[in-house]
Length: 483
Ligand code: NDP
Image (cartoon, rainbow, N blue to C red):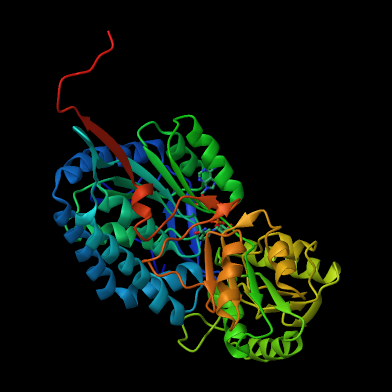
């Protein structure tokens, strides 16, 4: 098998196998061929991972922050040195084109390790003068944390959780999606080579049951999930028993608003980037493209032409611009949304059929005439389905954009500077782009509002998610007791 790892899990600084766990097959989405077989973690594997993480955390938290940072920076260097190999692995596991995985996956993971590696030594508290007395705050690690990932950006998600968690002095047990078990193991390996203590970052395989076991284990101090709203609710409920803090990065149905005065090619490019990158399997995608009536005919014409020019094909071919969906189930789900949209009266402008016989490709469809009540405008598709909705006025479109229960992201294209900021201010979303879409540099916080979750990844804001604040009040004089 083309991508078989040394063993299923990476625990306590080394590969670990336990064939008693259920078999998980990883398939190459372009052909359906099995590329690796791993086993789900048994209770014994989970136990070893959590115990090892507990030991490592004590050692790690006692190290100087600059030293912790240096380990993350060295791991970033290893990911960069192995970028080509990791890109190939990610393409085999997810089906995303190599043209994307070479620039967006391990590379953005390395950015994240560099950012938090650099920040590690600057994490601290503050002093609060209180007249005669004073107080100070300490940023303490939480302990052993659990990360649970989705299948669209496996190594990036692992880094987005591990890098800030480790920078703050925590240890982690990470469970990748069962669809994409491979690349997180390589992060674990790189961290050990970079000098992380054994057990600091462990990877265990498994489906929802393993995630649930992590969520409910008393040794886990905090949970961070990237996944669907449905899973988010379950993880939140499981954590309530602790209670333990949770970060939820969930799905979206984000609006992208194009005003008449927008630069046409930029707006079309933004809409395509926000719907077709990674075959549309991106949580923050702008899947409700609201286009003002004046520009809509020209917008649709350019959008159709540019969409028809997208090169679908073998993800390992550097010329391929769009690969297959991650699984046959996801392809079936996307095709069902397309049929549903047609049945509900949306106008199919282009695309929308299965492409090729092998693999799970779909020709990206563009729909026009989509209305707010249609299923395709309300539910997350997680595939390359672009819906255009018309609008006339600014106030109207902001109100309609905000009717969604989701609130992950939003975008606005306009040349009117004041309007761009006004609309961004009015949109209920965790992240807004003005004249851009789906750029998520590690320097800026990322996360949702409403049903899209809470807590932030990336940026300085992530430190709040991975540390706890202790306040120390210092009395400097006699105690003034009323008794
Ligand atoms: P899922 O919600 O199906 O799964 C997410 C992770 O949770 C997987 O590792 C899954 O395991 C695990 N899991 C499933 N059930 C439980 C449970 N009861 N307790 C604990 N863990 C559990 O999402 P997908 O993997 O299908 O990913 C797609 C979704 O993720 C989309 O909704 C998308 O919007 C969202 N997403 C959000 C992002 C964000 O940053 N906001 C980024 C990327 C995706 P397994 O898959 O092995 O069953």
